[in-house]
Image 1: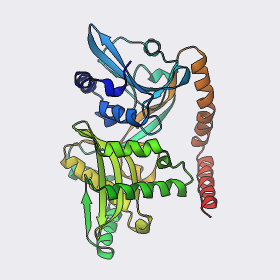
Image 2: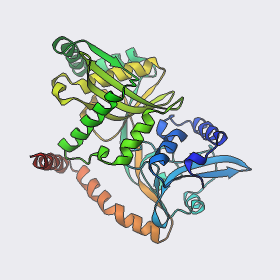
Image 3: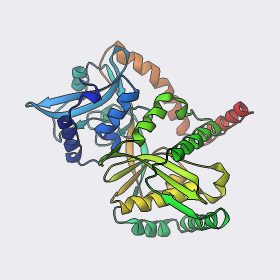
Image 4: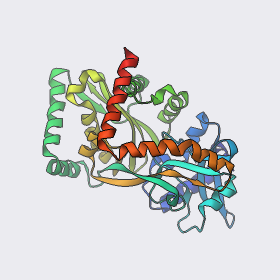
Length: 354
């Protein structure tokens, strides 16, 4: 068992080799750089290394809690989770937990290929993706065929933004810290406005984003994309990219420009720039949203749940998480109730602001 910062370059390279050999999309959340960044702000991050014949054959990044309660590294913000294993490695999930000294392993965005832990999933969710592997023009043509009104309206709003506000400019990989600060402010305000928990009120998340903004490696690069009008940022997104996947993470826009749908314009320009960089997939993440339905070309399953071994630690972990998961699942499965819950959250947020 190692701290992520204790991994040598040889071990990190082996991690990357195994990830590439798995055939799974090279989601940057599954790369060693993400785990190492989490370890700098979450001191209980660990990596279990599985050896076979003296050679590393697998890695399980995780965070360790009391009584051996484990969780996916960066749980709550990481959008792709699981172990990195040699294809065909004969391994049992509970045996791996035992070897790690873990009583449980909780996850909320487990990728579909994770055969060790998928059997322990309590719920399946959808993550939405944009395929630009054949180029942006092909994607836009497909969008024009599937959703002609949406595309026409969004492009018209982009032109109107230029006419009424000023020249529109897009930067795919912006390095200006002021633009990142603006994004964080917009996103925090959005969370509060909609009654959601403000992720950026948690210091470790803010610090994690700051570290990842400075991370630049082939399979994990923090990428800030910004849409400007008249020289001022009107929409921005911070995510992670590998050579082939852009993991969309924190999008937001200045509400003063909401009538121009700058967030939608931003995503179209991100897709265009990503395709030009050789990226073939934009992963919009789990959670239904109108903009995802409009932009997506496909869907992939992800899972939430907890792998356990018999014991007190696992029982306590389950007791703490399962009731809330059941309530959330009950509400999500009933659209009218979900709509009422959303209105209630917004109403509570308005009361807090008043």
